[in-house]
Amino acid sequence: MTAEKKGGKKERSSDQIEMKLIKAILTREYSTGGTLRPERELAEYYGVGRPTVREALQRLERDGWITVRKGHPAIVNDYWHQGNIMTLVHIIQNQDDVTDEFISHLLELRISLAPVYIRNAVAAHQPKVVALLANLDQLKPDADSYAAFDWELQKNLTRLSPNPIYLLIVNSFDSFYLNMARKYFSIREHREASWHYYHELLNVTLQGDFIEAERVARKAMEKSLELWRNPTVMEQGK
Image (cartoon, helix red, strand yellow):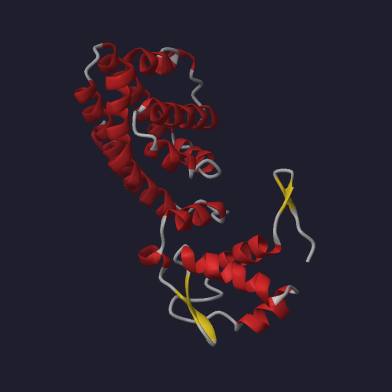
């Protein structure tokens, strides 16, 4: 098998096998509770040696995708319940089509994380947070501009938070976030809601009120999820 280039480096055959098997699991070619092909058949199917397949299977087991059984085909796990942060990264990397359900799940996750790192960022680096929001009037009213601005804002806020774990988590979404955000911000009412949120966050940050910044952020994140799940909410509120 010819190794493809990725970021200027050649992918190992085992990396390619790993990603192909993940895609097969995500597309339900291999269903939860079922089994993969035996190791020998996988080697023949992908045109590689059994040690290469074995290495890929070991990584899949490490990340919660499968359970390897000696002398028997590996069992496909319920990755939502048995996976880990790397499972999420792989799901994102294979998310060719951004589904509404997946965006809803990520918006729920954001409610748990973002208000806390925003509070910490304002408490630790209030002038720098103000600087991030100082040029809101230059934000163009289109989906691409809002998506790019929001992504840069999230990354910079996590950098300003004293807890580096938040940045690691946000970085995991690097290849996916813009596509998700473009879909979210393609709706005018969503852009308007975020515009009001950015300005409200700027105002409380200017006052140095990090507790209020957390409240404002949480309220906005909850509103975003509500709008995404029920687009008529904005119209009913008018």
